[in-house]
Amino acid sequence: MTVLVLVAAVLALLLGGAGAASAHAGLSGSDPADGSVLKTEPQHVTLTFTESVSFSDDSLRVLSPANERVNPRPAQHADGKENTARVELSGKLPQGTYTVAWRVVSADGHPISGAFVFSIGRPSETAAVVATDSPDDTAVGRLYGVLRHVAYSGLALLVGAAAFVLVCWPTAGAPRPVRRLLTVGWVALTASTVALLLLRGPYETAGSVTSAFDLDQLGRAVTTRSGGALMARLVLLAVVAVLLRRWARRFDRADDGAPPPEPGSRDRQVGALLAVALAATWAFAEHAAAGVQVVPAMPVAVLHLLAMGVWLGGLITLLLLLRRRGPAGQAVPASAIGRFSRMAFRAVAVLVGTGVYQSWRQVGSWEALSDTAYGRTLVVKVAVVVLVLWAASYSRRWTARLLHEARPVTQAVRARAGERVRVAQTVGAPSAPARQDHDAAPEAPAGDGPGEKTTPPASEADTHRRGLRRMVTVEAVLGIVVLMITTVLTGTQPSRAAGEKAAAASVADSGVKVLTVPFDMGTAHHQGTVQITLSPGRVGENTVEAVVFTADGGLASVPELRITLTQEELGIGPLDAKLKNQKGYWAAYDLRLPMPGEWTVNVTIRTTDIDQVTVRETVRITPVPR
Image 1 (cartoon, helix red, strand yellow):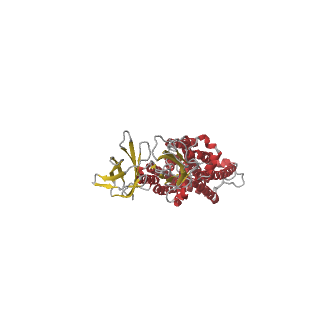
Image 2 (cartoon, rainbow, N blue to C red):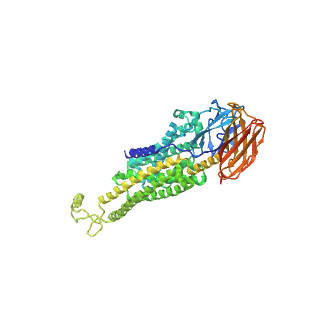
Image 3 (cartoon, rainbow, N blue to C red):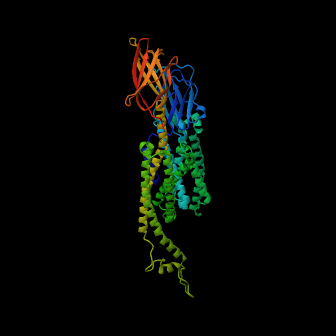
């Protein structure tokens, strides 16, 4: 019942805090750009991301104004670059607005999706509509997130209980509660891994839950980085099952009268190797595998996971044993509690050290702690870890008191074992029965004489154990909260990646300025438009291109087109772009803008030899990025 209550508490906390996760990668640019209007149809569409991505056959779709797909072949990496996705378009494309819908998988295993539009010739009144919801805001996404929580919990229980048995108290594997805890951890980790592998395909492609048993989709999922890591985890769990079964048989023989098994150095080495390999299946397919400093980040992530499992799983194991009696009706030895205290202290030290490095790697700046979701979640985790350290300090105090009280008891037992017992014998007469001798003159235990230190009363030791049990409970509950926050962090876009994505978006936003300015063509009810493209749209030398359209969307030929820019606040201008007719459009390639800010664009269009009109629009010129 205690195990079930603890597992239920873990799941309740994790499910209560589970939310939509944002992925690591981000779209940094596209060709054609979002919202751009092209004079001729492009041959392909290229997307560039902030990190390497993988994709399926339907990851990139280009839809015509009539909602028909115009990319006959699946996406490929452009020029061998892993952070790109490119599709070729069919031959002749009609004018209008095209929609690009994409869904790829970032290097840390999270799918990301989005959509943008571009136009050929002239924007059309309608465009294809695609869903742009979060990849995790689906039935498969939510179920996948829950299963990730279960997998982390199973790892903690399995690693922590095994470490307690192998390092702290070898005979702790005999009690049924510890065996059940190991079984619960193994079953939770194995079942969640199988489910994650089945859902990997629908999770990446936005499929339904029922498509989890599609063999073709499962085969593609196994070949991905995340699918391969899940398969390796299942193989390792099979080996763990064989070892757990072998140890269970050895303890069963001990129950029949054989001496309890003592783990040797080989057993500890095999256990440590399997634990490292299990933790590596997470590091290989999540945040550690992407971003900066991947080589040191991988072993750091493995150490962080193992320290979490040793500390939290060991706490739950100790809590179960403190609530029950150990083998032969004896309580948990104080020496075992002391060994776990030292092991837990080292695990927490490793958690803090690796956590500081991971925080620096994923956050990147102090401002990101408050400006990003990852940073704010990390601050909450740090606050809970401080509470954990506070509870752990009290647990260590109760442990020290138990160890202090255990020393006199150990010395008294050794003294009692070393005493020579005198047996009264008679000469020439039969000796008295042993029962009568013991009843007549019971031997007083050593240390009970006047002025000697007596064994501490049982009530005092019980008080120390109750205090330790209370603080271990508090520490375990806080540890579950830390595990919950850690799982949320693994599914949240790191602050450094969010900053790179924002910077890329800012550069993309300042890369091209497109203005569409309507004007009167001089004929009744005929309204033309002039489309002006200013690139890169920032201080310094810029290219200006202008295309004139008629009322029905066709290209218009005008005798003269003039564009000037004025910075009214600073009294700069007007600066003449000095456009030249390029036989279909007007262009200038050496317009220099000296200052950033809001500029007024004056456009003069001469439609006939004697008719002309001047219209104006504003554009924001950005500074040169540093």
